[in-house]
Image (cartoon, rainbow, N blue to C red; front, top):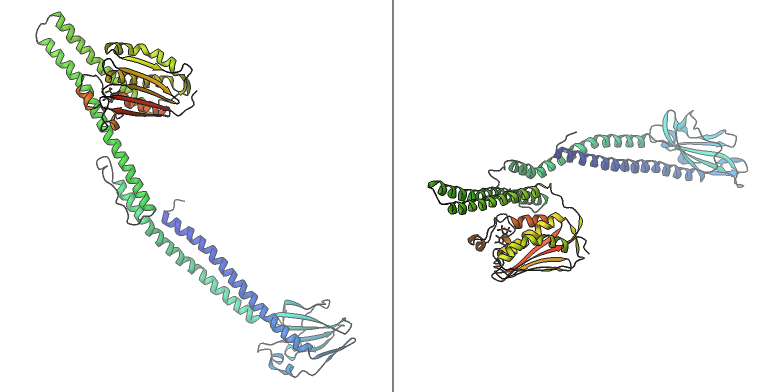
Length: 459
Ligand code: ADP
């Protein structure tokens, strides 16, 4: 059943109140019932005391003394709250009955030896009956005194009570349902308001935020959570737009350079050396586009979640040794010494290919941004691997942004050092996939140190 929230709350509340009210009503009825009957039994006991005080016994005979009170109306007339008395001897012969019984006889149990109370009927009228054995001096039962009081009055009271409770029950439930429904409608109102505003937010007005309620309740927290979510979506949309514009800019720049060079070439006939120079310029621009596309593809794969990190034991010393030939050319050109200090047996748990890309990017950066005749060191310390260079460094202001896509510091942008600002964002993503924490320390003009903290098993 697809019930609305407010109806569901109202129904749950009503069921709970129905159960509670039913329980309370049952308790009320039981208490009144017990009180009414114990009241009858008390009356019978008083009457019994009265009768016994006027009885004498000798051996097997019961002697009834004069009991003037028996002439009272309650014993003579049937109408006024009558009390019926009956005394039988051991043979079951009625030796006395009150006048109001006329020819009727109260049924009794001759075998009873202790006082007992029953519900019974006299002349088709419900009665409460107390039976008291009459005993002689030897404690032998020589007769039975039976006292009966009509129950009609108690039955009427109980019937009236049932009627009142049965009428009150649905009324209580109905009022409770209305109250719960109203309260639930009022409570759900701000949520409906949220739904209305939130459903009106799209790409075009993603900057819109839901207004926070005055009270600091769950709705407040919900609104705040939705606002935080909207802020994250907005950031991601902005980043996406920024990414697209940066990517097109990065592609357009080398394309424009290629076009310019080609235009120069076709303007007039040149000597072969000029052609060679210009063509190698074009090749280097094509390489630039190629590298950019390669990195964009890598990022797209990482972002889409298809790339899954393997969990293998990677011997870092062997891995780095296999990569050094790639770094040799730039190191030699700038006369940079690469110092590697990694124990042969050192193993980290991660993905070999991912580690290769990370190390390549970080060491290439250290070589690119390192000083002429400088030193690039690769070191292991406990469960960290650091790559250090004594190059241009990064200012504190720019440090937080270097892992952003397409971000390049002002210094590297204005220099002739080639790059597109994608390498570190790829490194960051690959580290996340392997649960490696990466951080960077740097001082402008002095050094830059990238540290990888391996959180997985290592030996
Ligand atoms: P790029 O292709 O520009 O090198 P990266 O994403 O690898 O892109 O690096 C982003 C920026 O971070 C670089 O442009 C540079 O400004 C800065 N950077 C990275 N590594 C170093 C380093 N070792 N020394 C100084 N600056 C660095």
